[in-house]
Length: 177
Image 1: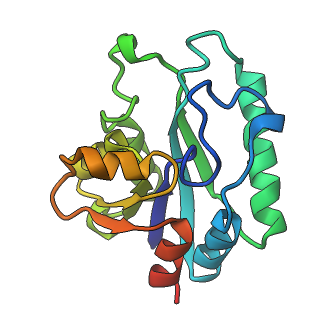
Image 2: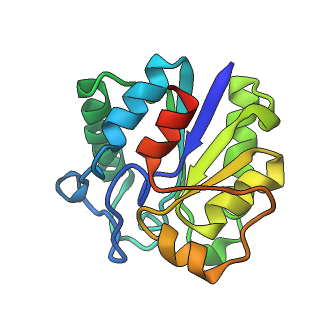
C-alpha cells in the first residue's frame, strides 16, 4: 500500500500563530488541494497527522475542530481527492503525551491502523517536529518550504535523509507523475 502522512497547518492550509480557530479561518494553500487529488489518483492513501493544542488551550472545542476538518475534507473532495483519516493530538506541550509531535505516537497509530511499512511512507511537514516524529518511526521525512518550512530549513538540524521540496504540489508531482 502506498501511504503518505501530511501535516495540516503550513502544508495543506495557511498556518497562523494565533491558531486556526474556526472553519472560516481555514484556507487552503495554493495547489495543495490539487496535490492531494493527484496523490489520490496516483494510488496513495492520504492521512493527516496534526497537533491541535488549541483544544487544550481552550481556543476551540472538538466540535469546532470537526467542522474545520469537514471543510477541509469537502475542499479535497471538490478537487477530486480524498483524505482517508485525520489523526490529531489535542494536548498542550506541557502534557508530556506520546501523541504530540515530535513524539511518534500519532505516526505509530497510523502505521498500525494502515498496516504500513514505515520505510515506504513519506511524511510531509513544514516544522522540525513533523520531521522528527516521522524519522523516529522510520518514515521518509520531507520538508516543504511552505508554512514555516523556510524558517525550519534555516534553523537546520533536520533528521538525516530529509528531502526538501518547495511545497506539497512539488511532492505530488514527484510521487505521482
